[in-house]
Structures are given as C-alpha cells and as structure tokens.
Length: 295
Image (cartoon, rainbow, N blue to C red):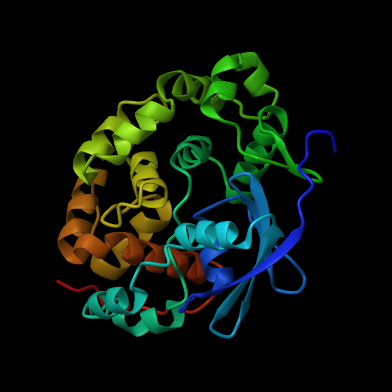
C-alpha cells in the first residue's frame, strides 16, 4: 500500500514471566489486539504491527525493523518492570482476593500511549468492547497512517484537531465525536508531557477537566495510559464486585476511597483481578474469590 514502509521481518525474544497473553490482552484494558488461531496475538504498537506469542518463559516478538526497538517497546507496553510476584503477595494478604490471585498471576497491566489511551476511553463510554474496537479502527483508518497491509496507526492529536465533528461522526463515533474533537483541541504533545509529571491526584483532576472525561475515564487513563497503579477505575462490573465481595455500595468517591484504603499502591492490579473475575462469573464461570464480605 502506498505510504507503507518496507522493512525486513524480525524476531526478538524477551524474558518476561509471569505473562498470560490471553488474560492481559483479552481482558478489556486495550482494544486493538486480535487473537490468532495459533494462540498468538497481533496488533499495532505505535507505528509498528507486531505479533506476540508465549514460549515457556520467553515471549516471542515478530515484527518489522529493528529487533531491539521492538523488544524495548513491548517491554514498556507490558510493564516488564512490574514485580508481579511481589504485587500478588501484597494483595494476597487480603482474604477476599487471596483464593483467586494464583490463577490470574499472568495478568499484567498494560502501558498504552497516553493520547491513544485517552481517546480510546472517551470512546468507551456506554459502549461494549467490540464497538469500541470498531470505532478505534474506523478513526485510525481515516486519520492514522498505514503501517502494514490493512492496519493503520492511531491518529496523532493534530490529525484529530483538524477534523470536524461531522467528519468524526462518519467514523461511527456518534455523540462521542464532539468530545473526541474537543479533547484533540485541548491536548497536544506538550500537554501530555506536562501531565506525565503530575502525581496521581493532580493528574486525575486535570484529566477530569477535559471534555468527555469523568471519574471512570480519568482513572482508566491514569492506570492504563500514565501508569499510575494506585488508580482504581469503577464501572458497573466493579460496582457489582465491590458490593458482592466487600459489601460496599455508594458513590464513586466512596468506593474509590474504600479501594485506596484497602489496596493502596497496588489498587490497579486488584481492580483488574476483580474485573476479570466478575465478568467470568457473569458468563457462568465460578467465582475465584471469597464470597464472604470482609469488614
């Protein structure tokens, strides 16, 4: 395709354990990865399209271009620096979480590009995962750049800034189009760099000042985009989990305060474990955690 780069195929190997690609890339944190028939996962990462496949304690990374660059990008994306074992030992002291954590030990939190994460979660309001993926794909096709074959990069802020609301609506964004354009007007690369320096409470409030960003979207972007592991996004799944497992109900602020007190700096991992468990339970699976609410 015109504009695509022609680069040699490259394979890199990464030591990264524990890691379960199905849990990590299929649990709803991120929306552009696709599972292939052989169990590998393929998707765009920045301006590259890569394929990931587990092989024992190794992660095989196939892509184009420089293998060391691809490996570094994947290590960043999968937060290779997180000591997942230590995090799980800390969270395992919670008698509710303890029974189910072992089965989720390969679930890692991802580190998305901040801008892509922000727009993705603005699009995620009142939409299921397949629809979110379709909207992101349509937006990327129209305003991104071709990477390889039929895959496009996520559009840069300036590309979204130049679009009209009507044009964005033609990507199937519906009412979200006006928020995506407004965010594109408010955020550029310099603003992202400034936000990276903010501590979680200040970052969260600044994100909430953006159009289309409320409590849940702000916490998702803090966690999956800016890497603030103390963030604890709360949606309807998490409301159900907190009520059933801990007897906690009430406002977003009340539930968030409870999570901060209960899980501390690892709240984001606790959230992912609970979120996965609640969705599995809704599909008829067994609850991995204690059903006994704890005081």
